Amino acid sequence: ALGLAAAGGYCLLSVGDTGEGIPAEVRERVFEPFFTTKGPGRGTGLGLSMVARIVERHGGVVRVESRPGEGTTFRVYLPLVAVELAAGATAGAEVAELPGGSETILVAEDDDAVRALLVRLLEGQGYRVLPAADGREALRLCRQAEAPVDLYLLDVVMPRKGGGELYRELLRLHPQAQVLFVTGYPGEALAERGFPEGEVELLHKPLTRSRLLRRVREVLDRGVGAGGSRR
Image (cartoon, rainbow, N blue to C red):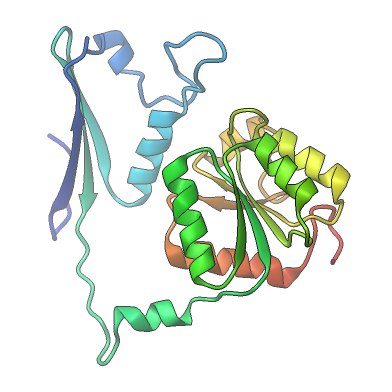
């Protein structure tokens, strides 16, 4: 029994492989935060726990099936939602109302697809975007920028200088820098990494275009740097 009870039914996303499979004793713990079978420095043990938490927040569940020597399949069940548009409403109307601007935003994200999406969404609303694939490149762009960077949109975990280290170096260079972290980590995991909620600006994944653009505009309009004073 899956324990699902959505009146409108569910959408199923299934991902599987034909690998070695997962032993039963490991399978029982795969969704535990910080549990990993990898060696030190090779994994955080947060990936699957983050997936499960995000799915549960949306009213769904994740199930795993595995047979040693045959492979593993993860199934994500998400409830279908019926949405009725108000009379005369269109999807384009919401897009037209999304905030934009002309400020310069530096985006540091190591995932190529996510970085490209962020750049496209921000440039589509008029922003000037400086993309960086890791912390070192972000720092180089910061130092070479001809005009001041108005907002730093940073991933928490990146190769060659992670978000935390980059954040501290940015503050040394620009004490009034405005920084917004984009992350899929739950609050307790961020606190473990030195990012307590309430002390840094956070935008949690999964993102929507509306949430991203409104949060970016909110931080820019507030005009408060990481040091706590208004720019």
